[in-house]
Picture: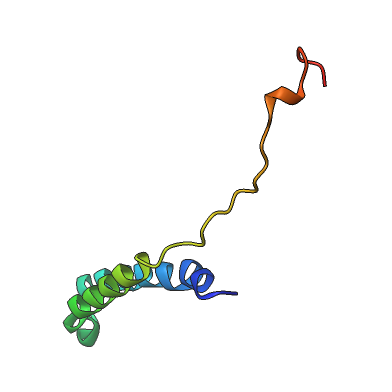
Length: 77
């Protein structure tokens, strides 16, 4: 498993969930520590998402399979 696979499978969605958790932490009034650091959690998730989203996916390789029309005669194989 390459780093790009780990990035697209775990790191990028994890940073999105961190941002969502920061929004929830900021909006809830019961746990003061989460409320206090909610904006910091959102910014941390945003920075992680910006970094992980710039790591591109694996390059898509197409096989060199060429269909040559000169091989067929009047639609017959």
